[in-house]
Image 1: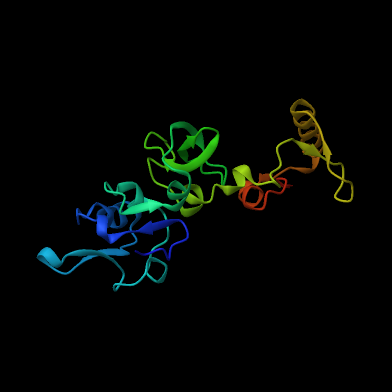
Image 2: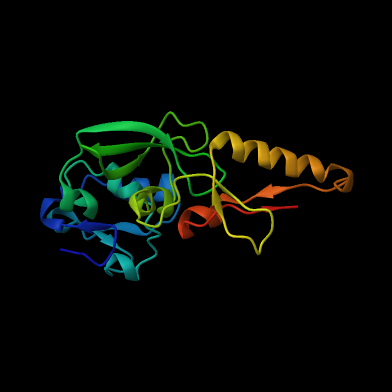
Amino acid sequence: MDDSNPYFSFDPSKCIVCSRCVRACEEVQGTFALTIDGRGFDSKVSAGQNDPFMDSECVSCGACVQACPTSTLMEKSVIDAGQPEHSVVTTCAYCGVGCSFKAEMKGDQLVRMVPYKGGDANHGHSCVKGRFAFGYATHKDRIKEPMIRDSINDPWKVVSWEEAIEFSATKLKDTQPDMAGKASVVSPPHAAPTRKPIWCRS
């Protein structure tokens, strides 16, 4: 049993050596971290040079876990919480790419995120953050209401969505005369992992 990866476990006693995980690693992810070691009845799935997953070239994308038909590769969140009961199609909150996921739930508990094959941005593929790092969704420090402040020295103030949108529109409109040849960038990658407000930089 290989439990070296923080997101999934590998139990070779369940493996039927179907090679689906190897093909997913090669053809979907392009990492080539997995291989079939040995021949005939001695064949087995191996990470790198028979290394633990964390010592191999594995990038923890989860493509092999999703391809595995026998639970040889299994998300630790599913091992802990049990199989999900229903799913909701959603968009990953980590960056601006807009990858689609099926958020698989058990009651109101999020058990795992599975890349949605119908997603135009990712077509069933994901990175390690989108696939496994969904703990921010239920973190105690997660910001759930819109907040505004006039200057960097002022405290944040919780407001309604309407007030937040109106505040943002007014501030952007006020900068228009000075914005010739410039652009504004909103940066969600910094907001989701740190659970801090999104900064708008001009």
